[in-house]
Every structure is written in structure tokens, then in C-alpha cells.
Image (cartoon, rainbow, N blue to C red; front, side, top):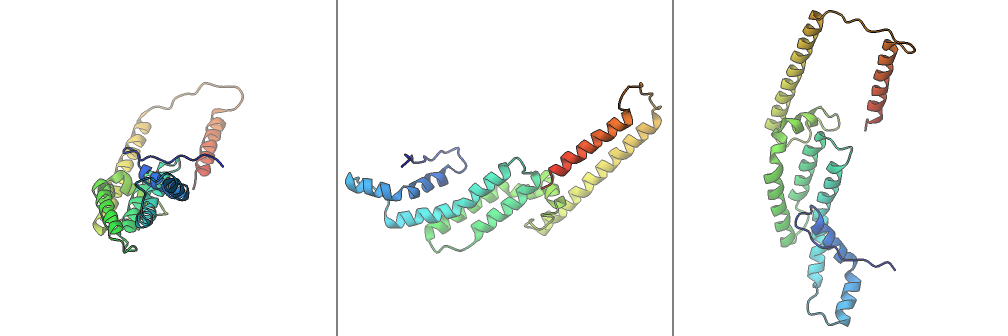
Length: 206
């Protein structure tokens, strides 16, 4: 049987508390046997074990969402939906345990305090709005939806101005002569480059 060590809590670790409680629950029977054999003065009671199991359930979405938004394929569009789902989970009244209710309320206040700005931050709100998976569904306020739409309009206007300015500059500049090259022509080379670029983009579609 492989040797297993208990996980310690780390104050700077996002999910270390959950991992610590999970490791305790996984080793509950061996710990109980060891405590009985060695007359240890302090071991969790049955109620404390049950409370620990409920706490792990509450913390599980934090671990899942941390993995999700930290993945190589994650984007800015994933932030607001993740926060909204997490807040909904913490707002649910599934448990009747007073300690779990207090824990969820404290976590909800902390999440709200730290991440409520995301819905009014254009880098997140615009990304969520234009993502076909999410659109405006995960905004928690109609006002935030409108702010996101206004930010999107501003971004489109800026892009359009830049496009027009670039076109005007190109029209003013005289055409440049390209040196002759052997083998594959410049036009074919440019076409191949665009084709490869499109292939890479299609390969990254989720």
C-alpha cells in the first residue's frame, strides 16, 4: 500500500484548505485507528467530520473554476461567467448547517468584494458579450449589460477610425516595386502564409 501524506494548509495557496480537508477525509479511518491505538487527546468528532465533508463540497467549485480560468485555452470571456456561477453557488440555501451558511455568506462577501468590478471592466465585459457561448446571459445587472454594449460600440468605432486612417495613408503612398525572386512568387508566398494562419486559427476553435 503506497504511503500517503496529509496535505497542509498554505495561506497563499488558493485551494490548499480544500486539499487539506480532502486529505484528512481520505485518511479518516487510518487516523481514527492511530488515535485509538496511541490514546491521542484530540481528534475530530463525528459532527466535525460531517462539517468538514460539507465544507469540501462548498469549496469544490473554487478549485474547479481556478483550474478552468488558469487553463491554456481560457480567455478573458471566461472570467465573468465563472464569477457569476460561483456567486450563484454561494447564494444557494442547500445546507441547513449554521456553520456552512456562515461560511458561504463570508465567501460570497469576499468574492463580491474582490471581483465585482469585472462586469464593468471592458476587457472582460466586451469579451464576454461577443463570445457566442455567453453573450449577455451572465451579467448580473441590466446596467452592466448596457455598459458592456456601450464599450463594444466604442471599440468598434476606434477600430473603424484606425482602418480608415490606414486606408488613407496607403492611398497617399506611391506603390513600391518588389524585387524579383526565383522559385515561389511573392503572391503565392503571401497566399500560403494566409492559408497557414487560417489553419492555425481553425485549429484553435473550441
